[in-house]
Length: 224
Image (cartoon, rainbow, N blue to C red; front, side, top):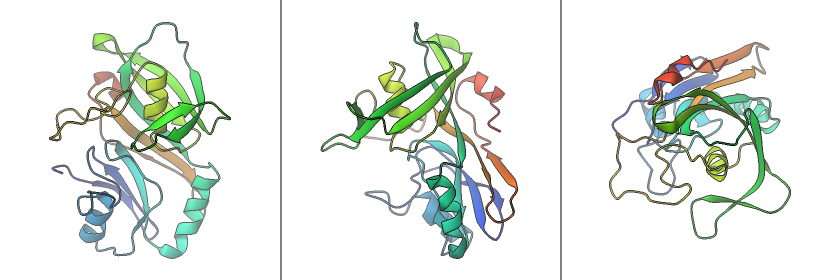
């Protein structure tokens, strides 16, 4: 994968990076060596480095890793208690008839025999807050997404279900993955910022991606 993992911050407990599109977060399936975790362990000489959460391979942006295994539980507890505020940006079509901001709640489950998720009847297990922040050329808009839950492909599935699939999504609403990776058409989804109160220092920490989506309006983003 011809893109670098940028280190945004590093101390004795945390490493915060800006993951590029197309790079898997951790080894899985056919992506074993070309992953953010393997690269960081090697380049930073941190063999015990471990991820505190994950981003889809197609999604770019802010991702947290823990340096000290003794501290990992305290940070992971923040994610489990939903005390980590995550802000994403996405470029997708503008759909007439929708009023923003809106909240999408639904029950997501894995599609049988497929890598994707689908909405089904039943009690909601996923929630995303969606705001249209700017209109772009070609009938597209820049959206700010705040997931209240962390289901697999949640943002992609929710945007698609609303009739506005994220630009260059090869899985939603239908799977059409190319035989050869097209690095010029990255999924227009970015983990813009992450914010939490550090369980050790008590300070509010906020980290922002230095990457941008294709739409010029995304340069107005302010995740914190």
